[in-house]
Image (tube, rainbow, N blue to C red; front, side):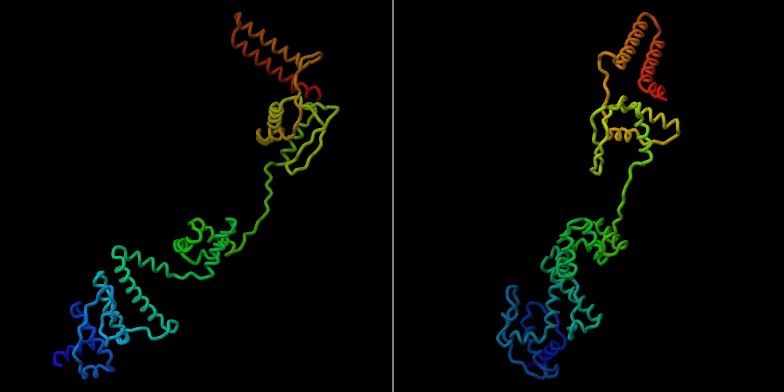
Length: 376
């Protein structure tokens, strides 16, 4: 071997360099033979035989298939760092990404390794994965890299059990209680992504679960306080019933009973009565009575609902002998017709309107207040 060849061999043994595809065969032979030596000194002193021709690397064949018989896979495994660095440099050149050569391998277990060494190994592995992803998907290598990272993220068995229980929970409150156990463990977006295969979460649900964990505790059921709402003041209801139960609003009947059904399902039997005035008249008089006494009653609609529950028969004016109510109503109608005829013959219109108004007031007085004044 000439001195020039020995010098080239020594350089290859000390520091592997990047070669072109045309010199790939020679580099494979030199590196493989050099790594079989014990020390760089013995590598320099040993004489090499005439090399065999090694073809260039092709995509569909591995190096071991293309190497001659004396360069087998066991020989190539003696220099993993060199092969890794050489391969990654070629790939990084193709995808135009930066690459930091690997100087050493992790010789200890992962649990006994320091945090700094772990971080360095993670950075080197991520850099290599990013280069490979850009080689596999030249247009969207970053997206492929993110998909690999997400698929490799580990989810604890406890979290899987909680998410499964959340999916099978029958009610919304139960779901909030389960979600409150692990709602603070992850950021909102990360939790929504992890939870998507089981059941989609919204920002409102996560905030509700976190609030529940803060106030009541994670996973605890909130205390329920029984609230009995009284929509009406019973004093005001008794005040109205005391007014409408006066005898001049009703007329007793010698036979029959009426059953009053309460909201709780109970029934109350009461004698059958006939209401002598309409409900609107009773409510109007009650409102006037409260106004005179400076008493604040319930609303008119509530008063109508109370009278609907307290049913009673309505008296009707029928034609017949000694029917004073029907005769009195007919007398007022006759007076109104006389006023209309007088208006046609020349009496003023304002006078006719005033007389009709007074006739209506007199009719209402005889039907309502007159009975009260006579009994008082």
